[in-house]
Length: 78
Image 1 (tube, rainbow, N blue to C red):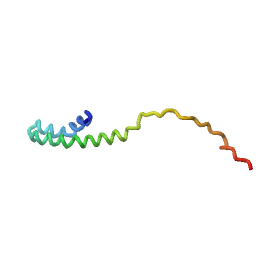
Image 2 (image 1 turned 180 degrees about the horizontal axis):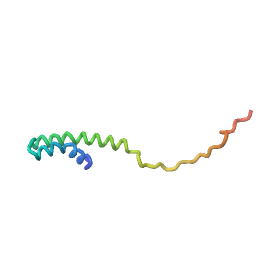
Image 3 (image 1 turned 90 degrees about the horizontal axis):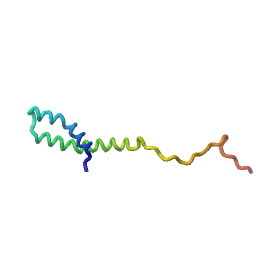
Image 4 (image 1 turned 90 degrees about the vertical axis):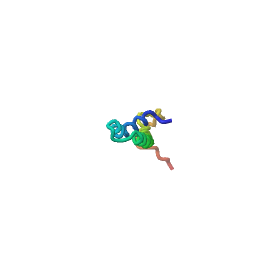
């Protein structure tokens, strides 16, 4: 399923072609082709962004605290 953010980003990427259609400089088929090309590109770019930012905002559960001792561990006596 395509996320709405992907469609919105693809629409923003193809907005210049849509504007040129409104001003009668290109045909609607060219606008649709550019939008269809923009959809997989937007999906890959947003997936990369989600991958990079996936770990932000997560807090790990607190683990076992280790209390350090001065001087390190005791040496074995021989």
